[in-house]
Image 1 (tube, protein in one colour):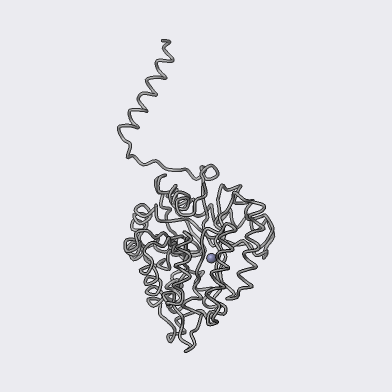
Image 2 (cartoon, rainbow, N blue to C red):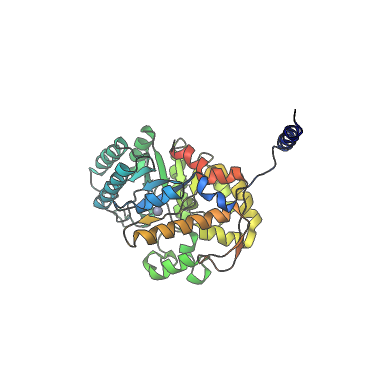
Length: 362
Ligand SMILES: [Zn+2]
């Protein structure tokens, strides 16, 4: 054997030995690995036919979960969004998974249940993998006696049973960030402070007569207790975005539930400022229950170029936060924080693996 080959072989053997001797040694992504690593954003709202959103996701190596939501509280609103989902799916059959919704419009009419089940079936037959229930259940929908209808209301039982029988998923955005129940100057993130000062009607601190934060969480949990077999993703960190220990306890209580991070990175950054180690431990321990998401959307309010830039910037910010230990700032919070630099395995779970297990991209 030539000397040079021998040298190469022994180098290889040494690296191999080190690898097998220390298999537990963590390895890390670099920021530059971003385009080559498979990722998913499991909570987006594309409400247009234009291709800009999905094209940027392709460039940045993201699969998407495109979610319909009963935001306007009308069947027409839900149907319109589903139409856009179908248009997008025609153009990009491999790039996203659709999640549909039902409307609570007509909830008190005798045919609401039948109509809702028929609608869900038609969406499931067209490829929807699940449904989203929204905060209007618990916060907006009124009963005949003008009390709020909560998620655990018996009248929803046949709907949830049907979804489970069809083997579909439930995405739940119930309640709001805890900030919603706090005065403006006690809120932890600038985006919440801005939103609730512009929308005082949704700022529950001003409405102590309406259900409390805990009422919303309890109603959601009672719905989960009714259906232990239900596949559930708690959107927006299951509205327990304010404390990773409380969220960990909830994940322990519901061992099959998962969460997404949509629109709550501000709360993650805020907690990182105060307790980076605690936040890092949480993401390490629960990585296989956590899915990266942004809540980004396209409703044609900006140019395709602006949209693409916004998406790339947000995705890159969060990638940098999870893979590096850079000192960072964000307009979401006051103060700076250090990236978590999670090991590759945790990054892979949060950015793709958990979502692939739940939604099935491949
Ligand atoms: Zn959303």
